Image 1: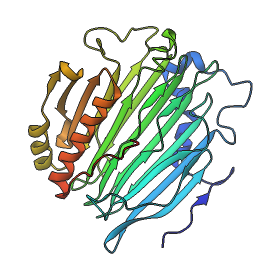
Image 2 (image 1 turned 60 degrees about the vertical axis):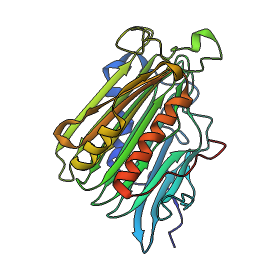
Image 3 (image 1 turned 180 degrees about the vertical axis):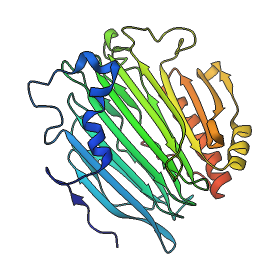
Length: 325
């Protein structure tokens, strides 16, 4: 039986990732204008400095979550095994006790998947980055996969509200024999709320860096979106599309080649979606880009990629989508 989750309180030693998120935005040029402290509660204060660590191991025929540490407002409950396509896989929903990400929030997420284990991690709902008039919100994610591990990390979309500022730094360490699907979906804001909500956020900054188990950097990507300074509705950026998704697949070369050949690239005007695939440096995997008018077709394309990866890497199928998702 997995141990009970441990609540991490103020003053407890956390991790290097937790230390890094405290200064992440202070070191970013794009957030230099937003260093003022919120008057209501200082940045990173109690209740605004979330921490979640999850460790997965193979125990017999199943993967179990053997290590959990948490600090509000991040929360996770027990791992379930509801995926009939991969019944051995641990499935986990990340929860939050707040109404979204607020100004001054600092979040840290760590996922460790040990050798031969398999896990699916997602979120309870879309991540709402609330409107801000002071400071910014920051997030650091660390993902580690050992030999033969398998992880699907596919959160629900991120919705940056008008005037929000958000920076994310993700570090991924994957053994050459492991397989990771990591997806990020970005919406333009609350586009049906009011006209100024449509691409009305101040800053959205995202960095993803890959490493070998020995600590050598294999690839890095950073993009900074500032729609008020540089409009996104232009050719070569978003064009006429509203929804953007990036899907990273880290996998052995033979698997990546087969998956790339099956997915390819296309534009489908009938469902307002365009997608393509590129190779990551150092032969570590692939990166898919998807643009769409609506979030539904974009999520369906991610499911298609997920299904192809499962079939190739695990000889497993993807079960039908739940009616409420």
